[in-house]
Image (cartoon, rainbow, N blue to C red):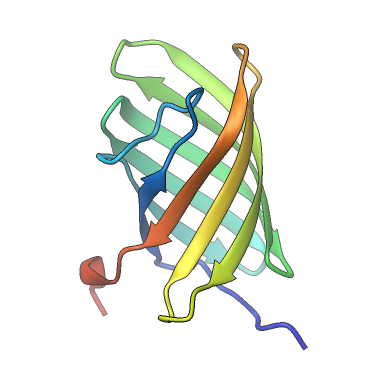
Length: 119
């Protein structure tokens, strides 16, 4: 039986980003989860402010996102992600994104930042 994963209160940083991606080393994302519904806020680097909303089921996270970039432009897209627990216990999100407001798609990797836990 697969482990039930939760993103409630998890904060992540970007481990790698696609050429078509805007998130980067300075971007941090914080998740909230209620049942299978997932919400996220992110900012940093080339992103002034971003939001996402989606669902998590059996290790698959699906969401839509919108963000205001440092340039002042507003862009959005959709993502299909794998959520896995690494051997060290941290969560990893492997995001396969596609822009809906401009051309491009790619893969970003986010890793849980255990140093930011407030519990």
